[in-house]
Amino acid sequence: MHVLAWHEAYSDLIHPMVLSAVTFESRFAAWQQWYENTDQELHVLQCGDDVQGFIRTCPARDHENPPPDFAELTHLYLHPSQLSKGAGHRLFEFAVSHCKGGNYSGMLLWTIEGNARARRFYEAHGMRFDGARVDEPDWLGEGVYEVRYVLPFGA
Image (cartoon, rainbow, N blue to C red; front, top):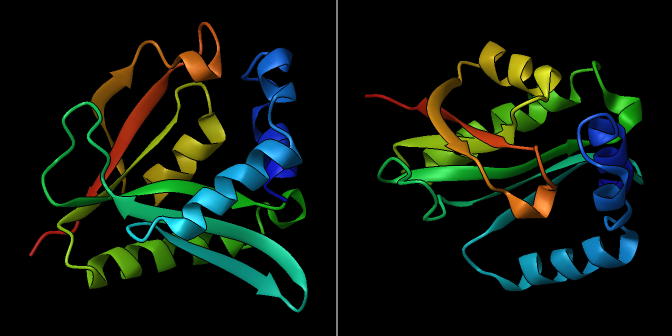
């Protein structure tokens, strides 16, 4: 599901050679590492045996001076059949609730600058672009940049 979601979401944004490296094998290795890392949380949304999507959260990584005491939503992916059906909203709201329960002062995430659909989704959920931009995300390929969105939890 993760590979399918990547190819669906980024086929117009990332060079095909970069996308071709996102395979079951490469994602399987990442998932194994996530399960072993105790400061990361992985949550899957299922209906019966069907995986509809997943999120992954962790303490904000030391990248571009994150706001203090923020959690990071590193992944929110949906099976393409679940787009615009509410699964993304449920996963996002769960991420916020989960991070608030972890006593974080807010949540941040990075998304591809050209991913208008994702940016509209996050903005509709109260997140705001804070001006941070990674100009050289070499793993995404030349000309593809990430921007940071934040959601302070407030008092």
